Length: 486
Image (cartoon, rainbow, N blue to C red; front, side, top):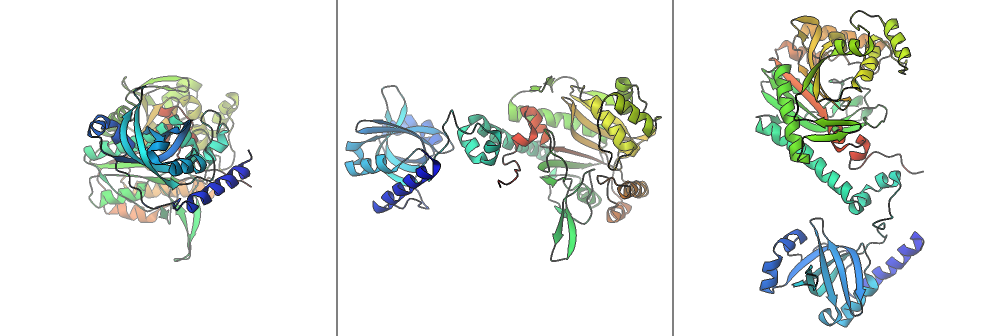
């Protein structure tokens, strides 16, 4: 039957409920038990013989002459309800069979009852409509096969597909376990601005919007408050973190989004080496709490977070895999190697840093991990401290898993003179066309001049969750961004 015809029939059933004196959309219910609780206390309910009331969505209806079995689902579980004509009355039974469809919400009151097949059941003597659904749910086995339709109607995807619902549950556990770990380690959760005069903390093209009250353009943040959290380090807060949304006006891929959740922490009197130890512990904690395992299949890689986490030197790894010494080579030599390896790139805003990054991305795809990328050149990282043993590199680390980078941290740069010089270099790159280069944040430099203690900072996004789920990151969002239907 066409959808419009189904809706018309259901509107007629809605009218029938109203004519029978029911409000098809009441604000209150008489529910006494969530279904999970009723199932858990079923023996006691059965022995007592006392009435209890369930409420939920009808997921299946099976009629047998003058009786009907239905499956009721409320989000905590599913339980069978048994309606008998001689129990609820002929008029109430006839109204149910005439006006209620799969997908509607009802409440049912009765006693605990075991069927011949030992199925826990509510034997009802009263029912009442709660919501009349005007559109039908997709069929359990044949509905929502189109990927775009699944994302566009995610609420149905979650309702119909148990694995999608489980993904949403795991996503919640993922962030909750990260929060638990950091709070346990003595970190305090903070909130920092989403609208900024100057973006900072990452290399990304920002979204721009207009602030009408102040009559100025502002940016949606591209990091979880990195430069703000460092100001809180100046303010004397020793261990802080933020979990929040960030926005990057970039391309879409299996690994990249424009609107997503990220966590960043800042730890005073700690360096990147202490940060690596803490991050390894945190990843293992999250994996155990969310997935109950440390072993994962991610793409073509078999990963075990319980094995030794190796360290990979940035320049040395690139040289071993490509033969290019990035510390000695010029842009033309690197471009020649990119051409040889058939690595394509966007020439807009192109420079040596972008060329080296393209070369590194080729290399990292071959590294399974778990491990840490270290010793990145200073010209690749404007916010990290230099390494005393080699001032041409910085104290930065990145988590390497399944050929990708899944978290980055460093010993934060707290030398205001060095920071100002690096911002000025980034500003020159922006003027030359690199839209992802850092903006020159003079107010942040001023804050550093008041003194920021030695600090380790680290950030990781929901891409880690997507990798551990072995799914594209777009698919692991609850409501992925979609182009509107025309």
